[in-house]
Image (cartoon, rainbow, N blue to C red; front, side):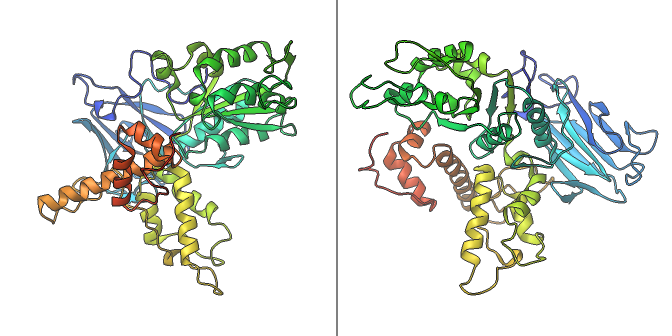
Length: 469
């Protein structure tokens, strides 16, 4: 199995980063600093309590980058935090494209000193494939180490027919990764079929997946090719695999093992030549432990596993994504910079790249005056909501909260920020279905409607008349 984020089995891979602490502290997680690009790429040193970085031979991590100062950066660990402090360097220290003086870093964050990029990682972080040198893979884009790790895996997986399990939050580009993987494979000129496991009623799923014969059931007036037969010779992407009915999973496993499908009502199976990719926003291993997903099917599909990182964990990718998504939509020579770009980089993007794309489209649409040239980037209005809880300079205010107002008002600001971030992510994850979102959140549909309207998140329908799904 290939995985970009595999911890050893005696660690909880969902553990919060505040387990980070100085050596000797109970529950401490060992850390390391890795040089991910630059002249010293590949070097790594343990991060204990204090680590100086620069070109001076006396520091803990000595770099050969001429743009790095003798004593450039200090990393310190303690109190559940990793703090990066610029030591008055000549060329500065940067995170997410912004120059910093002192900053709390999450594990996995990438900082730039001179022409060198560094990342703080868990010391048991296993990287079986080095990051790609490319900044794109098919239609995927990313300059961050986490995305280049994804590209490195996809580049190698493209040359085989091995199943690939693509994990990640909604909006991170899972289906785009699958489509790009197919386009880079030897099957690129053959069919590419997407089967949405969450959108097909359970009673029709077998027929839609494997096909059926005429007369197999009421309404089967002719033979029908299922998704596997439609993808014969090419690739089948099982989108949102975690939604596949449990009773259908053994039949899918049998197809993966034998390469044969049996349409509903058929007397004999037929051979198919299909490469299977699967995507999910669920933790299928946890689902298997709860009995909600077959573990044998999980292990059959995770021959290669890749996790798409959320956008909030790779803010350095935002400027490039904005440039690509706004290509040819702005005045010639217009610069993507300034306050608008800082706002977009700082926002947490609970809906990930999909939400970023929608925010850009909304700003362009509403900012365009009929019959006039395109609006400049710095004139666009981005209503992206409160800043998400991302790493902040020490002493900075709580995201979405002002400290110069009374306690009661500050608390109301914080609760409103929470509602906006949580509900936007909830509705995006359930594709706008109030019924499904309410069930997942443990709320009644009526209460969820009230919350959505309170934060002015667009909804459709009526809580008393929306059909059950």
